[in-house]
Length: 318
Image 1 (spheres, helix red, strand yellow):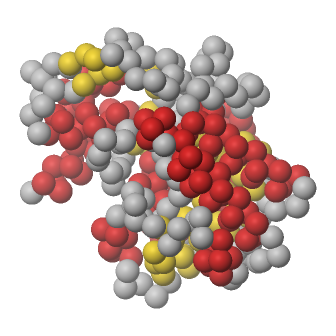
Image 2: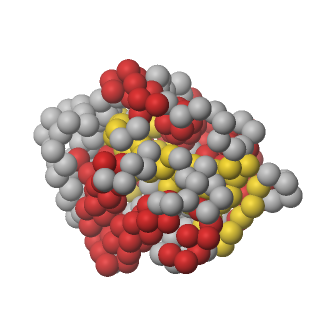
């Protein structure tokens, strides 16, 4: 796909990843429409964009097909980042997770047909691999989801791929591993880095579920945005699925130690509790395909990313 496209829709545009995608698109000269129901997203993530002529925000839900159909009518590209992203919440409410993550995605895909949309980039998840024993996890593995959230992301991803094969819509699926960075919302369903960070800065010890030897591939949101922009323009990406991580495994114990050190809270030793249902033991991305086809090479090390994040939290609290 050439760079001639000009108008882009970002669903979940007030959210963590979505708002960073919005920033990059605007910086690169695109006109951007962001849609978000603000259940998880926050307007403050887009406050710096609100007075721009090349930006428009719509408060709305991807489950509203009529709204989605109107919004996509005059856009060239869709970045679909809107989702309920919590494994824990999906265990508590699988039906809602399916509504948002599967029906919402299908609504968007249907709306794109017959419109001017030329590419659909879907933010999927490494959770689809589940407890697949092979490490690192490559795109050829059989998915084995072990939570309603993972099932919903795999189902949506399958729809995305079918809309390429059956209807000819140019699509790309990006399987994010554990994304972290500024603007990630804090709450009961937050990612582990956000939860650890907020507890440490409140002088509370990090809580680790299980023995802490479970591993994750933590990827800075800036690298995720880089991958998204590569997916926008790369012709060879169409119809494909790509892992987006770093190829580096970090245990939760190592993460807690690194964060305590960077935040200057080394005396706040972790508290251990029982493992949570739906959590996988090990996760590590094989990013060879993304390197080869997208030209994706992550730039931000975990220590650098966490240091930047501590600085961001500190400035917010001043």
